[in-house]
Amino acid sequence: MTDLISASGDIAAADAEVLVVGVFSGEDAPVLPESLASVDAAFGGRFAEQLATLGNTGGASSLTRLPAPDGLAAKLVVAVGLGDAEHLDDEILRRAAGTAVRAAFGKDTVAIAFEGDPEATATGAALGAYKFDGYKTGGNGAERNGDDAPQTVAVYGASEAAVAKATVLAESVALVKDWSDTPANLLRPPAFAIEIEQAATAAGIEVEILAAEALSAGGYGGVLAVGGGSSAEPRLVRLSYRPEGAAKHVALVGKGITFDSGGINIKPGAGMWDMKGDMAGAAAVVGATLAAAKLGLGVNVTCTVALAENMLSGSSFRPSDVITIRGGMTVEILNTDAEGRLVLADAISRALEDEPDALYDVATLTGGQPIALGRRTMGLMGTEAETERLRRIGEATGEHGWPMPFPEDIVKLMESSIADVSQCATGLKRDGHMVQGGIFLSKFVPEELPWAHLDIAGPADSDSTYGYISKGATGRPVRTLVALLEEFAA
Ligand code: BES
Ligand code: MN
Ligand code: ZN
Image (cartoon, rainbow, N blue to C red; front, side):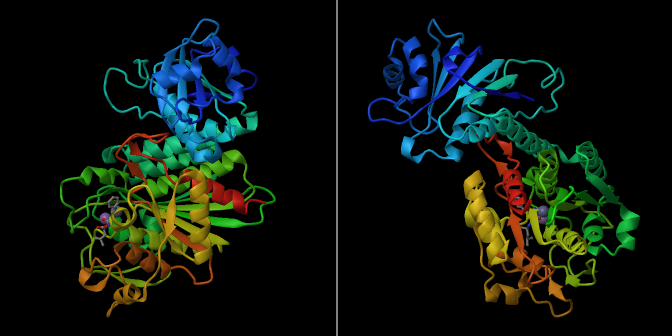
């Protein structure tokens, strides 16, 4: 992993191969902040003019590379546009830093100086340095192959604390991405449970793993039904972070389907490979819990993740089955591909037994989510105060979300004539597909409890590389969850 370093003083004096500087947009040429006076001097006072000649007038995330002039220790100068100086915000900084660090792959040392909050710059730089190692034989990852992330990035103006926090966030996000992009054969529920246990133990978090026998004894009918078709047993993993003096208790719950074939209601072949990432919700809540512990946040966190592989076999559950969720509620199954809500119902029910002050569940739950909101905005369902809180936090972190209603006609569609609740809308109507999932989960959460359900089916993954986001798993919404936990911390 790239080492972030806190640095201060004039970036022109930095002892790094690459200098990354931020410039603002201007009419004919970029506007240089005063802090770049000595860099400009090294360019003979013609830095802005040269950038303009190369087509860079400072638009957000525009990027220009120039050979460094004599007088700078660096070899390469990378100028990144930060847009209009009046409208600078943290997300612009994170994206610009991420773009710049990716442009510096293959170089060892980078120094970066932007105006604005250096913690945002540090976070964007650390996130942008991510690379999935992959499985090619002959050494990608372990050996240097010319396109690897810089070894060090010095962030000018960032305090030790800012750098430490950015590092923790980026490490958690990287772990979540690694897990989410791991092929499904290499991360089945028992293996995933052990990986979570190892990461949590290393962070000083208490771990409990429930295997098949404990799940049967505990009445976890959702997890057992969904995991029943696989030769790899399901698991329920619980992490308890209990810092001294913490007053509040937050429950985090995640969907951990290590592969979603759809089960008996098998999915179409095209795109099924994406379903290796159907455990991104579980990965994200674990990642946030690890970050909370590493940052020493003063809030109790219990993280419950339900891990199962949704497969087809003679022991698969089927449409028409009635199953019993932990706590006793019965559910009529209509479609085995709507498996996430079943494992979540068990996990939520278990999480509530600890009487948390608030509960948040995260899941790649419905294909309806990206259809309604696109691939960069998560769907937020739950109590008004909590969905609004996550919308507000998401705007600050750049992990956007939008609150959804529970319309009465869709609520009505979720009634079953033979069980306490129907798994999906009767007749499998697609109306309000995403909110069907939220409405189903709401049946397992007491009305007065602060709660939000985050549907991240789209945002968990990106089909392109931009800013600090790389193609593939995104690690969303780890940073939002950490910011949420900070609000509960004493
Ligand atoms: N894991 C999927 C949802 C999903 C779709 C996540 C695309 C990421 C990308 C979920 O288990 C699923 O299959 N949902 C069904 C529900 C339906 C059968 C009621 C869906 O969205 O079609
Ligand atoms: Mn499914
Ligand atoms: Zn699924």
